[in-house]
Length: 445
View (cartoon, rainbow, N blue to C red):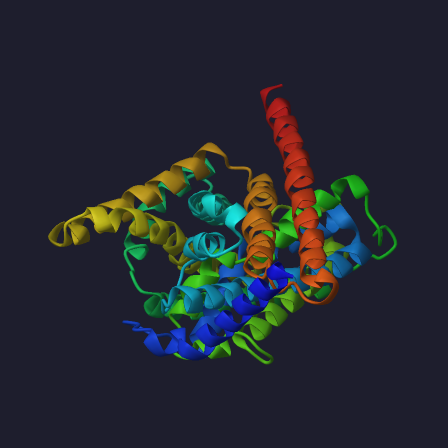
């Protein structure tokens, strides 16, 4: 009886907090971004090399499972982003703060949750920051490998006397990466994101041109693939659709943050675009090229036709312009921990040097592990499943512990989400590590 009274009091207190404090009214943003720029950033943070790996993912699953799985994962990713943002806003009202980052939201959720979990608040923040850093370092590595492979393919064809390993192209790209990653504000990065989206759509259309311009065979294409390869499919799809690390920075810097959620909203529009582009390119790319597909469908395009050359150049530029948006997440984590410990007059120099060192670190890892498909799968399985699926479900459960809905439906729903995320984490990593070992063993033999 007393517990019920406490819950009622808590609900009333939370209701009062909602009416007393509106975090949107207290936000002071130096460079606010519009809804269009927010959508561009959200779409570009998700689409990139993952979109072009879509056809290969359909090889793993079969076209029927591929379409169904893409739609389900798209809905799931959109829902997890929704509950993450809703929980963050609720924590802002509790803490009476205008905005919170991803890790700050996790810490606040546990700090204000049931007594038994409050001692885990710092651990939740640290785990989230670590996962964010590893995820977006991995994404930057993938982008490095993809750009290098695209450049090498073009140079090998049109300058055969100048054939060098793709790792050298990664090192050549180090300087332009360092220059571009000196951009500090999302508002300015949105311009590059918009340009990158235009180039990506152009690449998408060129890929469709070649897909429908050649012979499409349905006879040898299966609707249901080998179940043992489903984890690899799910890992690739989640990598392609998740941009969860960019979600909170984008929402926090929007001119009209209330437009982020709802229907229609920035989130709904962005996720609809992502699911449509991924499913169509994945389906038709699989029908056209089948098992011959490479880590990126642009690598399957003919090297002698000018539209194909444009596609390879466009995707390299698109990924290049997206690189600083992904690196923004890594540096945002660095800033939160280091800036309070650095004197103000030294911060500009520290920031400049740290950005260069961070880019160098990402490029070096990309050079050391140039396995595009496998890196995509491992990042999707290990980190995006944790950041994009498991953590949002956990923090919503903790935040709503005293209001889990009728029959505790929120709890049961989140248990299913956590189990699904855990399945992707374990099975995806197992399959991908086995693939990496097999490839490396074959190379040494």
